[in-house]
Each structure stands twice: as structure tokens, then as C-alpha cells.
Image (cartoon, rainbow, N blue to C red; front, side, top):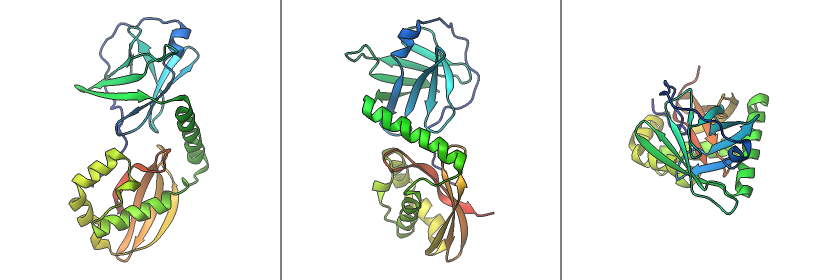
Length: 230
């Protein structure tokens, strides 16, 4: 089964690192939202003098300083390195070091960061209330119909997911096309990470799909070929 999901921190055992204490005023500089070239945003918040890192729809985890620029979580083997400075002395980028790979995130301006925070708050409310994201049904229908035809509308997808879909288009189409035409979509609920869950009725069966939209309305993750509905 092919699954495409937002980038996520993988659980593991964190290597021993030397933790230092930083002044809360210093910690406050790192608060913001950071965006990679493709994938999920990283939100850094400060609660009770503790920095927290939150990747996409995942739960926030505490991060601890080993220097004024390098931080680490205690629940995974990774490091977060802050770099650059804006006019207010805040870092302009964040680099995630994990599994021998580096992923760079650029700090969003305050207006865009506010929009992301509002979207995340709305997502948490949707999870609680079990209500669909506006536009998710239309986006999912458009994506499935594009996969069936072999000509997906890549504008429906964020860059990372669009690239992955291009690479695996033949596999996705071979899984979806035999199901026949889409007849209806029925919303079932919202998953723990905020993905909307639909039963999609095709001419040849009913399959469950999950779709996750970002603040820009583009699909950032989900289950693109579906699985037999229970």
C-alpha cells in the first residue's frame, strides 16, 4: 500500500547531550514558524520557559539547549540548529539534523506565521469536533479523477507530494483505475493528525481515503490509493 505523509520525526533513543540553561529572553528569539522547501512547517513555541517543537500535525515535543544555536529533543535522536539573524536578532533559519541528513527550514514572516498558527488552531478544533476541512472533498475528488486519467492536477498538491506522485504515477494509476469512475464521497471523520477520512464509492467498490490540506489549501499528505473500506 502506497502512503504519502508529511515529513515526521522518527521515534528513537536520543544520544546523551549536554543540556545548558538559557535566559527566557534568549529562548523567545527562536519562537516562530519555519518552512522547508517541501514538507511540513516546524513551529517553535515557548511555554513556561520551555521551548517546544511541533512538526506539521504532530504533537509538540520539548527541545533543550546545548548551545545558543543548537537544541535537541530527548525523545528522538535529532538536533535543531538555528542560524542567521534578522533585524530583531531572531534566527532566520532552522536546520534539522537527523539520520545523517540535514533539512533546512526558513523562518516565515510574522503575518504568514500567524496564518499558520490560526490554521493549526482550526485543525485542532476540527479534530475535536470531527468536522471536515473546507475544500478537502473537492481536492480529493480532483486528485483521484486525475490519477484515474493518468493526468493528475499537480496544482492540488504541495511541491514534495507532487514530486512523489510524478515518480510513482504508474503505480498509483494501476491501483486506482480498475476501480472505475468515482460515484460519491462520504465524510467519515478526522484522524489524529488532522487528515479528513472519506469513503469513496467507485463503480467497482468502496475504498477509504485520507487527505490532509495545508494552510494554502494544497494537499500535503494522505493515502492516495486508498484501502478497502471496513
